[in-house]
Length: 217
Image 1 (cartoon, rainbow, N blue to C red):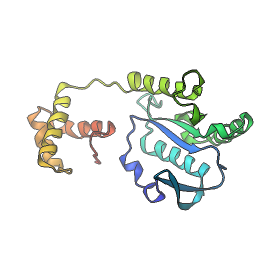
Image 2 (cartoon, rainbow, N blue to C red):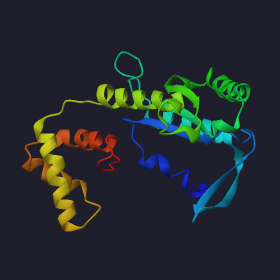
Image 3 (tube, rainbow, N blue to C red):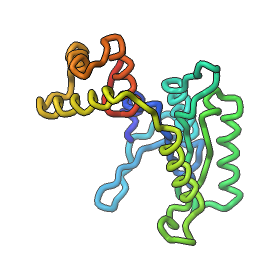
């Protein structure tokens, strides 16, 4: 997105996520980053910011780690969030060039606190997408990783009252056509659903992490 949005985007992200950080691998990783808008088949260069593609990638990784990576009661990182860095336009690079880009990024991760949540660094050939046997192996890897992550890591058992609460809240908000509700209103709905007052913040935070609502205590 445009650089003006980069600082506010973390407010809309959640921890129960596999982040796919995409970058143009055909461009110099140490050149200044510029957003590009596409309109009617044409590319319109956006604002050039005073940071490189490599610095921007590392900034995003650090931001995701700072906002969402929390150790559990055993002192270990949970199964989420996770990051996969994906370089596009691999068809424009030689095997050696791909190796240097991946090695350069991996070297930045070795001593970084956020290195533990970066699952992989890949470079993909966009031109092979959907071409069966000719398709880049990275696509198969991503499909497998995303499927396993969503089906095995994100399943959480919750009380039936929590599920009812979400459905009722969504209906009430939709019918009232209001995108913002007060905490008092949320608690009143929770009381109808037989949810204890002290549990409401936990319920709201749970659905915040799923991306259903935005809640900041």
